[in-house]
Image (cartoon, rainbow, N blue to C red; front, top):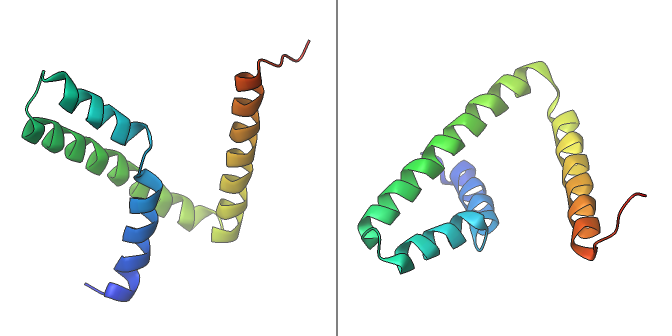
Length: 96
């Protein structure tokens, strides 16, 4: 395993996942006592691995069909649009 390739991916995904809905869900499931901490950890880890596998396979397929620069621009635009939508929704603004 090449640390030079692995470290930036690990760091980016680790930081992106901190405090997101995945982490909050795991906290809530652990706190509820409906499942043991080990069960929550294993189930959440498996779910994250499965969704990451889909993202990696989809990204590899897209990377063969579309240039990486186009993918980055498209992803950035989607984040901007969704961010704007959520700000508008949170402020209670409407289009009409």
